[in-house]
Image (cartoon, rainbow, N blue to C red; front, side, top):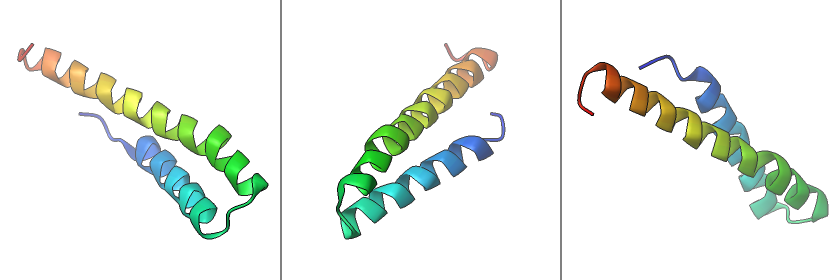
Amino acid sequence: MKNLKIEIVSVSVAMILALTYIFFPGPYTMFSFVFIGQPLIFYSAVSVGIQIYKDLKANRVL
């Protein structure tokens, strides 16, 4: 499996945005989490899923 540094950083940024919204609720923190944090989590999940699929195909598991 490839190095997943970008995915780790994007999930970390999204979690920081989520925690900021939990502790300091407001319109700007909600906007940042909804329009920045959630797409980052989605990108990371899809990217890791693709890498897992490629790894399983390469090892002839699928």
